Image (cartoon, rainbow, N blue to C red):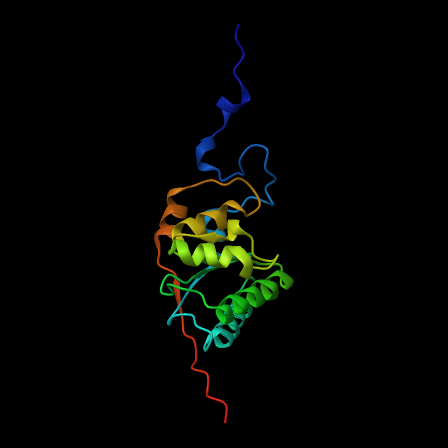
Length: 178
């Protein structure tokens, strides 16, 4: 006589239970609905320049502090900025340091190869590595999700999250010094 495996005797199907993937602790696995809270994707309402760089850093910092729970990664979409000037690159280094102190990483979207090369070269400090500079918001968000703890599963819900446009970030105008 053959014995029936205990999995076949269950009353509810296995596929209806939400469980962590094999080999991953249940506490470290994040479903797509929770993963969206851990990655914050922002697109400034204006181009980044040396004139508004400090205001951009303050706006991103305020948005990160307002996020609940605190994000693990911030994707900053600078696709409207064709060239990064020295003041803007220095402000991004400051922002990366600021986020690093709050245990978050910064990922940049710089679609122009010249902007990526210039920023990844001499102007970037140790807080920003070349792996954190991407050509598209989708690539940056996928890399941020892949860096989260647990298995990097691409589900239909995660595909939908990655397809959404970045959150608009208003950057206040800086007043001219008197």
